[in-house]
Length: 108
Image (cartoon, rainbow, N blue to C red):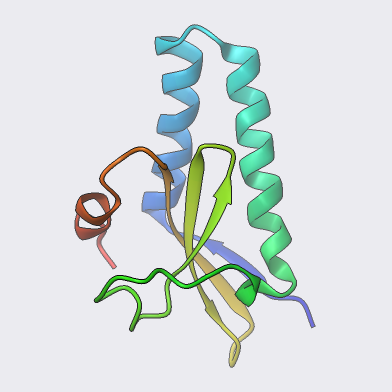
């Protein structure tokens, strides 16, 4: 049975910022579109076997069941819930950022 993918408002904002940065700051709109397509394809692939990616090691996120999926230079953070067959996308971040600091700013 496939999982339903749910994007939080923060994850949606993250996608928008990624596109805007690549398209308008780096002046590469075509690359921005292709990058978002790869991220979206990866997110949609979580509808099957979402636990195939490793859990985030640090607390308190590990206890909350947050997993991380790398896509190019980005990391998708999500929580799979097998009992209700949903995957909630929490954040999408550039891998070079201070991940702990960014996750602390997440309203989850």
